Length: 116
Length: 114
Image (cartoon, rainbow over all chains, first blue to last red; front, side, top):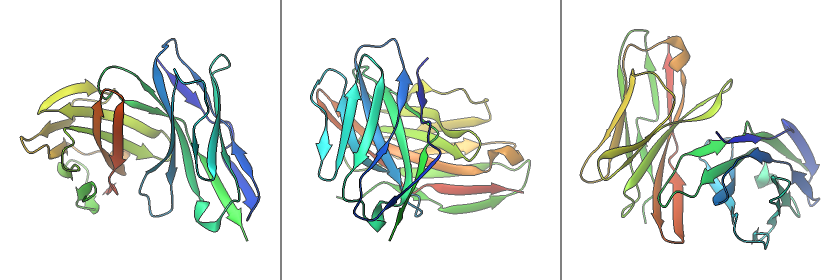
């Protein structure tokens, strides 16, 4: 069974600064996806960024980037130029690549507060 | 393109009752997954339906069941409600085809059991 661990329950960052959220996972699978989801106080879960395990290049989406270390089973999220709207719960998630949709395994989340 | 819709958004039930939640996926998405979110247990997978068939199932008791209709809309049912069933129930609509992957979550249904 896969597990996802987010060791930082809460973090805060000043507006315009950079913050890194940590995530480690455990799996014996070789083909999988990793995700970061954002859940603002409105509760709608939004996909922030996705990484395919077979890709060595780290994924980037505007101000969001990841540091994917497959051997270390680490998948951190860096948010640059933090904005007040980035305040949310952030969940790291793992999905086995099974030819179709397979269940997401989530970490417990990191509550990020961006301070003006 | 319309997003994932879930109804109702809020629900209050008493112990022992049953409840049915509905999820309408994004047009063209044939896979619907359900997750339970609680402060204590976090996000846990309930089940996934694809083309009206349950394809994956999480570790929940038989009181939790679901189904999917030919138009891909899905319902989940919880019978004999317990206080511990109070949670946010999230539905995710997915399209997985080759290297194309899309998954969107609905706004959730907040269930309170008293």
